[in-house]
Image (cartoon, rainbow, N blue to C red; front, side, top):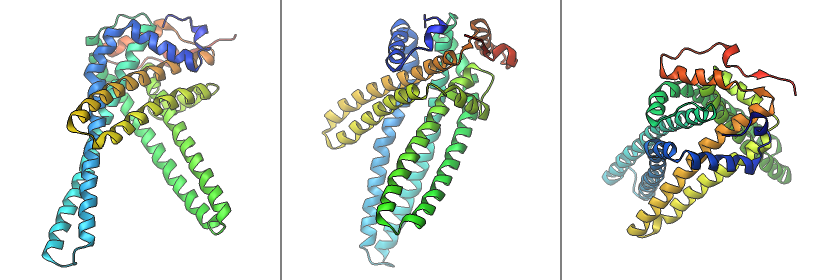
Length: 329
């Protein structure tokens, strides 16, 4: 990131994407190492999860179909019922295990990429060994931020469910109003959930580069995104479309021959890894864009000291050292 701080605030949708490409092309080695060590395993787990979930779910549906057509109380019915119960337990345990490993790798990958870009920005010497030594110390802060995001999403879903039930009871008797309410509710829910997701991604960067983490980082990112919401929305929407496209490719390639499926799986793994690394890079660039947009001067020296603190025993710096100062234009 060779741009002056005053220039960063003017980066738009294409400017952020171009800056991401420039960073990767200039630091190919370090990002290739991060991708190999963290992003590829993360992408592999995600794709494998899709295939395994589909297989387990199809087995469950098949046994439920047989169970519905088997006389209740018969020996075969009891046998199928036991198998179905075992499959349901396996399915949910697999989902829990996948979620845990996926989130750990995602937080580790986020730590590595954010730390690397911040070191590039401050012209701090960076090696893959340093990055991997810092990651275990940073991801714990990200975990706290993620837990708060999980709580917020859970509360958002509960409130949305209550509003949906209330709206269905109130307007469900009138077909036209019911349809309009359903369309409005679905759109509002998706926009709200996407907004929370953007706040969380930006809060992850804040958790690494500033003193704040957890709920404070969520509040900080909510304030930062003001004024640049449109650009952030467009960038994250594009990244989300890339993930959706890869997932759709995996699902559509399910019925192909084994050779084609292997080749298709490798291509999907590469594409998903590219989308992931660029997604993590863009969210860090958006952080710097938002900081510059709000005229907050980023002290490279203090930021460099903050990053260097991770290499030793981490002690959060004082707010006046890390907090970015406002200046008048």
